[in-house]
Every structure is written in C-alpha cells, then in structure tokens.
Image 1 (cartoon, rainbow, N blue to C red):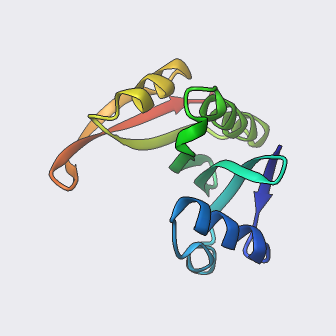
Image 2 (image 1 turned 180 degrees about the vertical axis):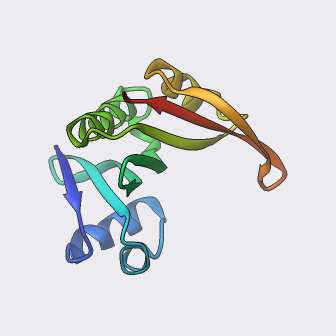
Length: 138
C-alpha cells in the first residue's frame, strides 16, 4: 500500500527515518514547500519510499529507495509507476533525476520507464559523474 506523507505524519516520518537511516525529513518539509514523500508498506513494514519535488509543471525525483531484502521484486518499479501516474494526473511536462553513472540497476529501471540521458553532471557524486535523465510526459 502506498501512503503519501506530510509533515504532520510524525510517527511515519520517524519510522521512515529509522528504517532507511535518512534524516531531517521534517526539516525538508519545513524548508522546501515543493517536497513530497510517499512510502510503500506491506502490512506494518515500510519497504521503500520516494522523495520528489513537485515544481509546478514538472517533478524532480530526489530519492527512490527499497530495503535491500526487498530489491529485485518489482517494488522500485511499482513506486516509479505510481510517481509517473501522479504526474499524468497533474499533467506535468516531465520528470527529471540524477543518477550515479555506476548505478547500473537504477539506470536500467529508469530506461525501462522511458527516461533518457540528457546531460552528464561531472563529479556530481563525490568525484563520480552523474547522468541527468528526463522522462517527457507530454
């Protein structure tokens, strides 16, 4: 089940932060009016999450993460499809993201959903290049 979360969902934020060792989600909500999060839960266990920015006519995907023991079971695809469907409902123009050039599994996932490499970000990840990828929605 996918659940959108907001800054008032303190217990879900705490659970997400402890499950994925990600910090400052409350600060992210308070400092950035564009930030959005949703989580994927199975029973009471958070399996994965997506953090993206809703920037009027486009989305920027910041993070998509699945717990290691649930990887390669289509959960990442499920969450990416959910994000794309939200974008279709909102009639956005595109979704962009950056990905480490060495993250082959993520690149394959994004390409499966029609993301194309549009630029290289030199030394974007601590000296390692990143690809800027885009999926046109219109």
